[in-house]
Image 1 (cartoon, rainbow, N blue to C red):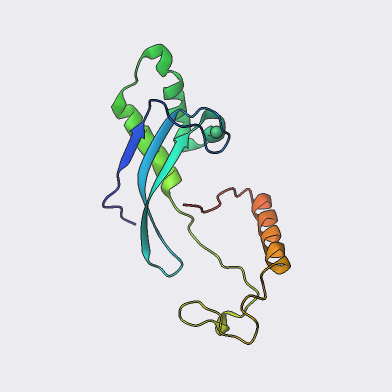
Image 2 (image 1 turned 30 degrees about the vertical axis):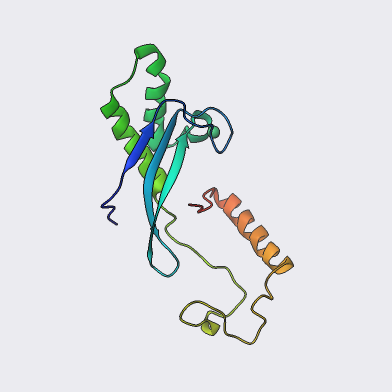
Length: 154
Ligand SMILES: [Zn+2]
């Protein structure tokens, strides 16, 4: 996968609060992001991420960066090239989209047309409501059991 127009904008001063825990973040990054949608088309967008010690600690790509930023107060501003390299690795770790997107459905895939729309005998919206809620419940239980926390939101 190639990202010919990847750009990362890093902001060390006054990053916004962490979107996950609401605590103070250490670093704010804006970066280009591309992924394939369910039809295999490339989609490009801009994403933002904040680096937060409680939320991001423990990941291989972020521990070095967190340590560097934690020491920045005592040692003055760390080398921007070192920060840049570690930050690029961190952004790369949050940039990677989920490898697969699954559609969980009660309909037979053979009843779908080439655009993925259901053309079978059942009411196309008959899986809304309680049935859909049951799917989501089952999926989140599986995901929790498997230790997955990525929700795929851009
Ligand atoms: Zn956080």
